[in-house]
Image (tube, rainbow over all chains, first blue to last red; front, side):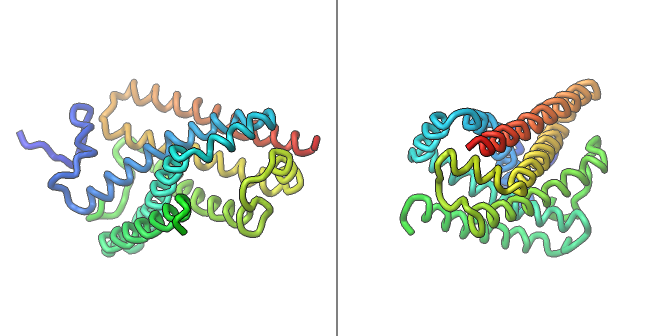
Length: 131
Length: 128
């Protein structure tokens, strides 16, 4: 039986994340999914952690100390990478949803990808103290 | 997908789809304003003390209003997006109904929690 890799179901949900033999549109889709799931996880974690800050200055000071650890800085960088890509790709999807630039969406994806890569590199260099 | 115009998925509902798109664009807009207000023209340049941050919130009402709006749109967008992901799993009507209620109640709880936190920070700022 022929399986359409672009139409996942409960039985083959993991195929969402299998980039082999896909076209550029599916790569855009996979990246959008991964960044969306990552950002959603971060959002709820962030809200819970911020809740600790609202109560005492001591909690706030401990949180600041925690923020300066390399693991957290790396995690924040991943959030920034996901945020840049998801935001820019979201604009692309928003435009095409309203019928704008539909024929150019493949080219727009590459613009999104390159700008995201440059932005991620810039923030990475800033955050790790290279710049 | 890349070859055609983006449209709602089966079962997504055109209203939910439209809200997902619009809240996504609003998240980008508010995040941009947030960075300009807090980190470029505002007072939050670098990490500050607890008292400085809470009083900054209390002295500038636009900040808590903007943060409250941000929590509302970002939670709405993320849960509608997550629902859209789950729709690909071809859930049964009953399961989807449960998911809808869980997301609606969970989302409302998180928005209330987030706005509550902002109110607590403003109250702390008024006491400094």
